[in-house]
Image: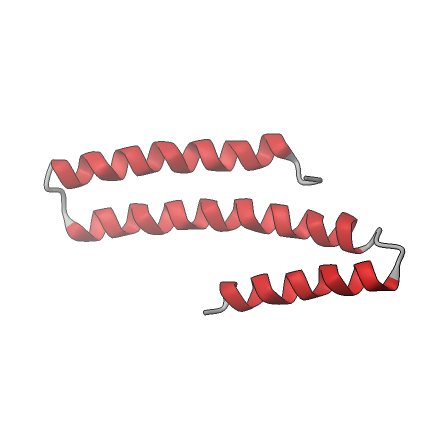
Amino acid sequence: MQADAKKVLRYLKTARGQIDGIMKMIEDDRYCIDISTQLMATQGLLNRANKEILSEHMRHCINEATQEEVREEKIEEMIKIIDKLVK
């Protein structure tokens, strides 16, 4: 993985903490909108982590693929993951 591991781990650890907080909010029967807001914030962190990983994949793995066949394979992988992201 070429992505900044410290940055990705920071996003994921923060998201994990937020998930713990969301679970506590649910247990405490907190207001639905507050819970939803925290869920969206957590999703944002996960999206940032994924963006970091995919961006670096494009910069390194695809860009450094010297053989046409390998490059096409990497591009197809990206197309598949983009399809999943936009569903």
